[in-house]
Length: 474
Image 1 (cartoon, helix red, strand yellow):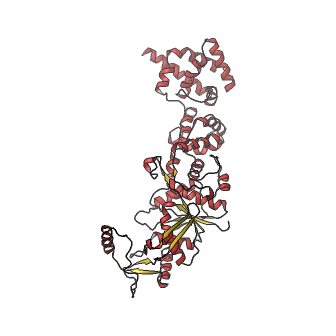
Image 2 (image 1 turned 120 degrees about the horizontal axis):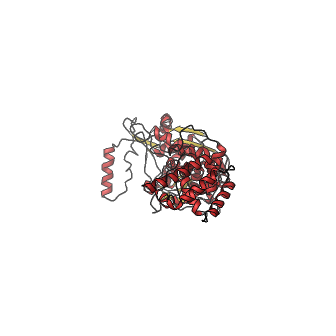
């Protein structure tokens, strides 16, 4: 497919949410698959709700997801002269007209039509005025065809037919001189040579109106692909009550951008039975042939599972930079602290199978990095007591005498002490695990001890012994 040009056009009235991110992603993948152009366009004409903060947040979210744009960001508020120019052309050609009806008059007619059970469409009283003024204090309406049908051939939904008699002569320029959505989106697409409009299916009902504006401007109508909406588990439209909907909230919870991208693309798209994709595989295989027509259901558990798969499959050294902000946030390290990356990679490698998020990974790294640990109360009560003090004392003395402080050497020492004390290995391993990590679950204790290191390990075991002895005195 040649010269593909697509756009993601968010309104900056909120943060980048899951639905918007998926729309951006499908546009980006379609452009990359077809070696086309992906444009970022900010639809900020709603001045009462659009903010610079939200614009920055949307771009931050896209950058985090690695959805790089080739052109833009364009802003509609910078293009008002363009909209006025096209509007003037439509008026001169008789394809648009001035409407002098005041908002109060329109509301009165709307209420009357509502009471009579009639259509709420504009009644067209300014459509056929024999003499048009100069537009002072007037809105501009687009002259819609009143007969026939408009057919939308959608790349996902197939053919949808709309009766033109149901289309309103919509306002394209308000009386205060500001343009409206259905008009600006078409002018922008015309100016930016958009070939494919890929967006949520909540815009499908706008499409026949926009098709007529494209045609009135003398522009070839682009192809449309309307993505089914995303629902919560209760089959209602996805909202905050279903969990976090802001993309950056998932970053803050410790999700990897690659995992979220993988999950979002699978919300409505498939390629055989494959679940986990590299970004290059997604670019290679993406097409609308495999996009479903039905709404997708957002499943937080599935996303969490997918994130864990990405953590498991990552090279440990590639998780160092992503996990650092969480180590700082959890006060495990101070900002700017340097690490032996080989050591940190080794520590991370022992925890990948056990960590579903970067936050969990950081919290577990705490017992490797910190000078001391905080005991889980139940773990302490069960294993740091008089019953195990001889085991802890014996292993401490044996480890202190060990020159080769590696997992192999440590394992041998544990076996010797278990044999000497005539006890099960677990009766030594579990008290030591709690002494070293503060908890009853961790990677293999021999590996953990090697990574924590001899000096710190001995200090923690010594602390555990002292706390048991102090408990005896009390």
